[in-house]
Structure formats: C-alpha cells, structure tokens
Image 1 (cartoon, rainbow, N blue to C red):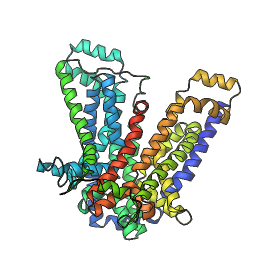
Image 2: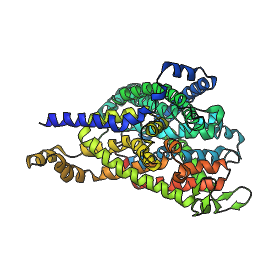
Image 3: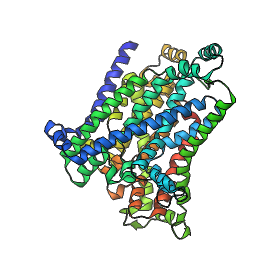
Length: 524
C-alpha cells in the first residue's frame, strides 16, 4: 500500500507540475518554435555577438567563482565551526541579495566616483562593462561554490583523512591528491554548472553594468518583447537560450547526484595538515573573500546618505517613503514599498502551501521536476505567463505567480529536508495508530517540521524581494517593486534615492537571512 501511495503521489505531483508550472512557462516559446524563426534570429549580427558574450562571460564568471569559492571552502575546514558560521551566514546574505542591490554596490564601490575607484582608478574596470558584469557574477556565485564544496568536504570520513596524513608524513600534496580533489570534484563541477546557468541567463547585471555593448540573450529577449513587440523573435531567442541552459542543467543534475549526503549535526574535519602556514593562508583567503562580499553592500548604505556635492542627506529616503506621486517611477514611493511587501508575503503563503503538497506527495519526482526549472529563465517564464494568462489575469496575480514559481525549488528543498528528518520510528508509530494521509501530515509531519517551514517562508520572501526580470516584463508602474525602482532612479541619475531604495531592500533581505542563518546552515 505504501508503494502504491508513493507512486500515486509522484504521478499527481508530475501532472500538477506540468499543468501549473511547465505549461505556462513554456507557452511563451510557442511563437518562436520554428527553424525558420530561430535561423532568422541567429542570422543577426547583434544576436550572435550577444550569444558569444553570454557564453564567454558565463564561462569566465563560473570558473572564477568556482575556484575562489572552492578555495574558501577548503579554508573553512581548517577553522572551528564557530568561526565558520558567521562567514557562511555572510556568504548566504551575499548569494541571496537582490540583483539590483549588487548592481548598486558595485557602482558605489567601483563605479564613477566610487569609494574605492576614486582612490584607485583602475578599479573602475570592476564597476562597468565586461569587467563589471564578470565581477558582479563572481560576487553572487562565490557563496554557492563555497557552500557546495564545504558541505562535501565535511562529509569526508575522518579515518580516511587520518590515514592519508599518517602515510604521507603530513605532507600537503598527497592530502590534496587523495582526499580534496576526489571528494571536491563533483561539487566543483556542480558549482560550475549551476553558476553557468545563473550567469548565462543573467538580466539585471548586464542590463545595468554592461550596457548595450555587453548585453546577454536575456536582455535581447526583453528588447524584442517589450520594446519592439516582436514576440516571434523574443520566443526564438529564448528557445536558443533554453537549449544551452538545458545542457548545463543536465550537467548540474549528474554532478549533484554524485555528492555525498551532508553529515548530521556539526562536523568539521580539518582536511589539510594543521600547520601554521596552512592556517595563515586560510585566514588570508577568508579575509579577502569576506571583504569582497561585504564591501559592496556596506558601500550601498554609506552612499545612501551622501548627495554628490552636497554632503550628508536624507533626501533619498524621503523620496523612497514619500506618499506623493513620483513621475520618474509612475507611482508613489510608499506604494512601491507596499507592493514589494505584499508580493513577498503572498509569494511565501502560496509557495509554502504548494511546496508542502509537492514535497509531501511528490518525493524525488518533485525534486527532479523543480530542478529542471533552472533551465527556464525569468523572462521566458514571464512571457509564458503573459501568453497563457495575460488576457484575463491582472498583473499583480501574474507577478505573484512568477515569484512563486521562482521560489518553489528552494521551498520544496527545505521542506523535503524537514520531512525527511521526521524519525522513522515516529512515522511507523503514527501509522500503527491509524494516522494516514492528510491527518498524518497535519498532526505528525507538519508540527515536527515547523523549523523547515520558517526557513521555506523566509526563502520565498527573499526570492520575491530579489526578483527583477519577470516583474519588470509584467508590471505596470503602479505595480513596481523596489528592485525596479532602483533601476528607475538610476535612469534619472538620482543616486541618493537609488542607494536609499537599495538599502531598504537590503535591510528587508538581511533581517530575514541573519535571523534564520543558523537554521539555514542545515541545508547549505
């Protein structure tokens, strides 16, 4: 009976995912699903340049982020778990930071008149153009690589580490060759593939830091759809992008399946020999990484109180929280803040509700289906939602729908981990006493997994706060969020208001992530 129930749950999960998620997500591709249209798009020089740039910057960004993150992960295993925890929490904040905050941070630190670039002019290369796009992508994805590799290294058997140390006489290279490389390789490959997916489909960062000369395919999807109203060209471009993302998603799935399960509880194995110079190098690596991840965020806060040429000011915050209609954004600042919070709360409620159902009945099938969502970019998703539901659903509903789909992979993963931690003996005892189906879930599984529900809800809120591409394509000015308003303020060169909006958005995200940082470590 249990096997039949699991099979039925997987089938239901599969059908619901196809109907409610994949059908609308892929319907936007329909106008461009022809060889003639794809060939027409690829025959244009600027699309070929965008394709080459997308591949180039994604490859370079992924390689740098994976190498730096992997080195930071090895360094983390040489220090105590208490010292590692704040660094991992900081990394989580950087990884989940909304993209427009990262853009604002790199502009504030490395752009024209930036805090560091003013003193060291060559650093301007990190605040704009090709260098800016790569630097921002590396910022985003160092934490991803660091945590994947770290979770793998702390699962290394202690006896293996001790044996290699003894037989190598404490030398460094045998430990690297026999332990670190074999165990870390799948995590490094998975990190590279996942980072490549995020960078290849990037929108906000190349749109703002790159400019027209450094546009990705995702930027041209928006250009075709919203500026030229050429839906066929937008769909064809999205189809080309989807093909590349699908290959990277398969690579990620294969590599991720080879990762060892993380250990239960806190366990840090000092993989490298415990020599003084090893710890010194480790602390130096972690200090550089921590500075790279924190300085852009700190710069945003500092710049929000500075008005170029006029000194200290609160004018930016006054504009962000003003109840008066603002022509630059097409709504009042207070309405934008309200929109942002409303979409985030609704996303959390719907994503956690739907995620509970999928995680409970879908099992591994739900995991596999939601992993494939990585291949669907935010703009492709938004086009599909507009194509399927735009004729009868209002924009706020479509925005919440897009945010919910974007949040579901993280929500389902955190809930699945919580459900799996329910003791087998407890589950068996509940079934013996007659607990089945919905009653078993509500009375046994959900109460024992409440910690995972807090994490899932927080992640859903953070994803909603940071979503930019789909919202920008769908929303009209009266439904703008803080992420879009940051971009609008940059467009009219109101830097204090742009940095103030970034600071408010950063405060929202950081508060949630830092409050739940210890819980979040369990699935990182």
